[in-house]
Image 1 (cartoon, rainbow, N blue to C red):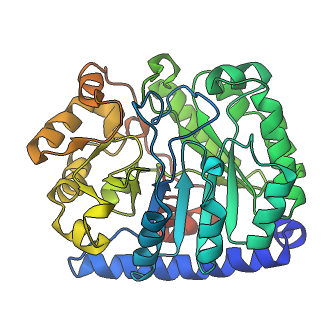
Image 2 (cartoon, one colour; image 1 turned 60 degrees about the horizontal axis):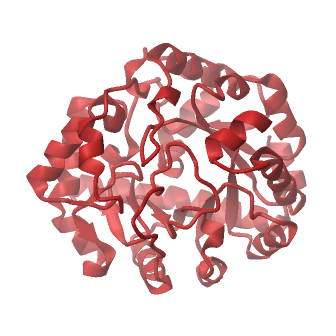
Length: 391
């Protein structure tokens, strides 16, 4: 993997990856830990949805069915990044919708060349010219969603030829020398592909440097509960991840388990919070209730006074080591009502949906399986839950 990184990655992209993400990311995580020891809070990293616009209609997507799509004003996005940098945070996950539909995006990347951005994209708009522009910027890693084979991908993503377009996006990205990742939301319809040796080796041969598995969470207008994994399937996934890390020359990433196999919620740990396209600050993308908005003032002060987020971080570890949306969706409503938080889903009926949602297994429901690789044990303890805080 290291050989691939050094040989196939554009040198400017490699430098920004190692310095902006690696060195600054480690320093940012260290500052975050020091803040916690002093009783202060500001997330180590932010994940920001810049637009609700998308050219696909995926099952389990948290932005579908909104009454009106939001697009974050560039001034607000710059404010979030600038005030985060003041706290030593230089890494941001950029989500949507489809973030490549957000017109000011590249100008923001250019303006903040001292930062590093992970671009969550469905890949359909990642053309050779877009890849070339990203190469010139050098501070962005595309994370391309890959949700299944030819048949499954179109069903999961609500589009046509999605599988082929994702393949093209991977090739466009790797040929441009970008630090390229592939993500899969593992569910019942793509579980077999997730475990496929042929699939993983094909990514390695094409220059993909990291493969990010996350567990399907039933949210949004089309929650598709039937796709949620069983406890047995989640345990099978965890076992696969531990073994795969000792077998394949590609980084295998998750953000659900620590080095000893104990489940966790990155939002509950405070490592990351999510800001949606309207500027609403949420615990994570799938908990669509907010007590504060970026427009209300300085980010530090908003976090300082947020009892809604404080209590979330304090109470979740007492309830679950998994995902509360899956383990106890009704608790979210009681927590929201207690703090007077608003529905930030854009659909206006998120409380009603969660109240009627049955519990489904999450990553906290499986037995603890310790990492076999000492490299991953070290990385998970010191970095992965900072740099992989999306989970």
